[in-house]
Image (cartoon, rainbow, N blue to C red):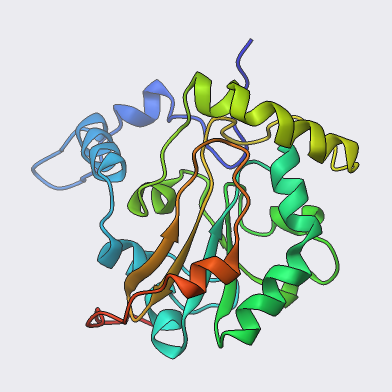
Length: 224
């Protein structure tokens, strides 16, 4: 039986959808407004829109933060995934590598804002985070949902066995269990390097990510 994903809200009830949303002469019906709103929400964001819309846990927008210094943006799978747990075990190493290259580490997750703190080792405030329950930022960076091969194919078996043997464990997917991870360098509103997943067993290699970085492109306008 399917259960609601964490961070997602149930659709409005029938009474809400058909309520009048205007008390003036137009008397527009609520369901029309609702459909327009849902259509706007379902439209993929481009990087400019995403940079201006999403905020780091420290308060600034993604675009504004990228103007200050390069961002090493790591998109996580759900927190029950053994590979997410393995990434979090090495979180201090990722942060050290980002700091060494003059960048800031940013984690993107699929829970509601603040819910991720229970899964992060040490002080959650030590690393910037972005909450993306609807995966709109994932989509803006080109990360979709994996298929059977990406999620359960042979290329996953050995890395999964290694993670389990190392005690990373596995838990219930409290968010989209098919969402794929990835890592990007984001500077001055543009992606300068990326590591895309071949399977759910993706683990970011920030040293190689920085080595592959292209020169910074012209910036987008930051909206604080």
